Image (cartoon, rainbow, N blue to C red; front, top):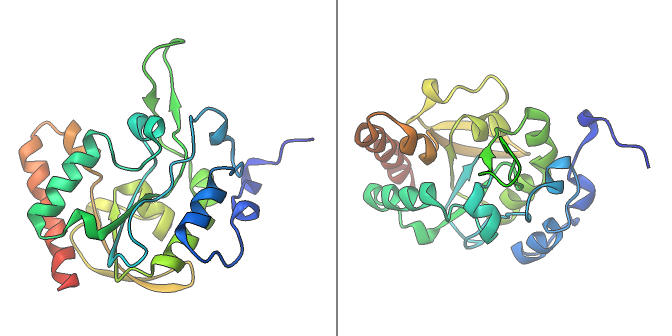
Length: 215
């Protein structure tokens, strides 16, 4: 079978039509072959949380720990995010967390060396878009918190700049639904920051904006 051109990659054939629950989506996503990222990843990492969650947090893609454990935001960035949410007044247990891309994209300097995160391309984000659309249709969140530039581009287009919109409330048409969104940085960027405390407080400040929207 000839390989499809990259611009034709899409998860759409793997997304069950009119899925009734998140478990059905999760089971289907485990077999997704909509783009080449599944070849090297350990497994699909689908979203997690309650179907009636008021807020959906959308990140970039699974990291190394998420890929190994099969759950989103279970690594160091996820632990930092939980702490920031709680400090901002949002119960992490009341949120639905997911990523724009469901497979870990990485590179290695040498065989058997540490897997180094590599940002997904816009085409890979677009290919994975049907899964995010299906999650939004079932969860129907009151608010989407956009975690970082990659998630923002996946939801809002390639012109998105997190530095220009973070901490503001946007209203946009997303996958056929009118959504309210609050962009902020990805928690992994806080861990990489030279002044980690200042970066963390900036994240908390943005999440407090989201908390006010939910009150």
